[in-house]
Length: 343
Image (cartoon, rainbow, N blue to C red):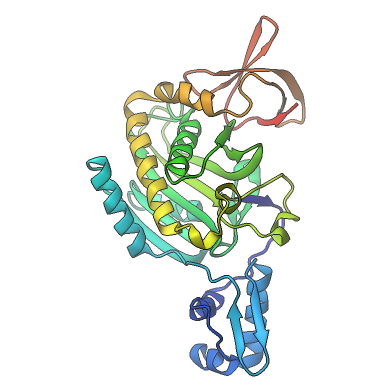
């Protein structure tokens, strides 16, 4: 997941229709593509230009047509469900999950929050290839590369209220790191409160949104975004240093099965959420601190009002609050109110 303040909502359902026709890696003439979708050749050309601005590389050869230089393996709900069933066998069971995959919507988290107003979204997984208004922490926008990212949300209900859920984003970070390492991505670290990093480069992020009474019950929507393949053209527009799973693994994005990866992430998330519902954040605190890239290091915390606080990271407490040490003094900072930058 990459942060940006620009609106790059250029991929439409029509664009995805064309991209799916091109996903076989073969050349397709503009005339054939136009006939398939009922457009003029000029309109097809414009839609494909928009696809290029979304991070997909196209080759054009006069007399042959168009082809994708790197064919994306689009997410497929059936493939994810199959992989989830395999995970359930390996884990000896698991909660019932509903998986949906869409080409485009405004935000997977926004959609689940809308649904939650009318019906139960517990165990609902919603993944999108393209979000026109993906949301991140503190009002930032999430952007992704079609066929090169994983952006999904999971609805989950808890009997407890917001206070009990204060450390949930940290526990989710542990789940994501576990799943990535199980799939061969080494050196995955965490950055308080909700970043997934590798060698201090951001590879993904987490957004937790909670609805419900203060004492419970409550409904959470857990949003996760990961960079699988992030081209250089996209990185230059991102304000923070970033990387992607392809770079971490040292292999091409086509060698990363996003459907399997999504299933692994969701299965681990569900297991962690079930344990969190019973025991809270405390069982995850030690593992989170072990994975924290800034544990024991001097840092500067940036507060929402622009003020800064310096200190050494002493860890997190049982609620998930960050603890900073300044000599003998200790200060707690709550998730969602501060961000962390390396000093």
